[in-house]
Image 1 (cartoon, helix red, strand yellow):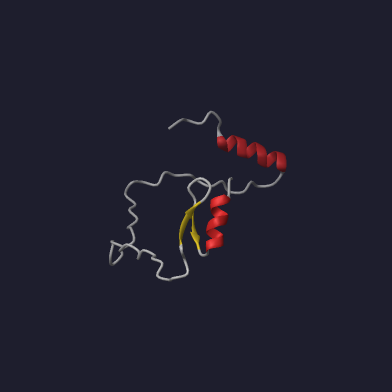
Image 2 (cartoon, one colour; image 1 turned 90 degrees about the horizontal axis):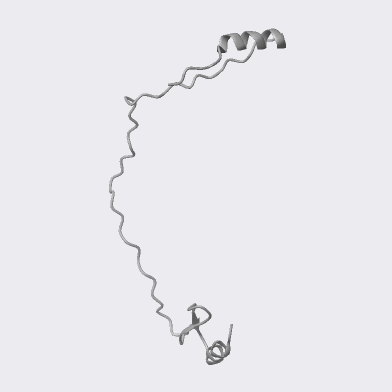
Length: 89
């Protein structure tokens, strides 16, 4: 711990005389010791199951097309598939 270069009570006294009013109380910043233990939250089950995977079960989608930079998009019509195949960037 470093020792303060200034005497705080002397500085407070000088400020009070200059301002002609008492200074507000300065908070203390004491080190919280290692003896304080905060318990963690107790939960009933620490394990969480995996989420169900989403699977398309409909018949409207014809397939999946790849657009710019390997972006997969669903294809729902023949015209949509032709448009995607003709795209450049």
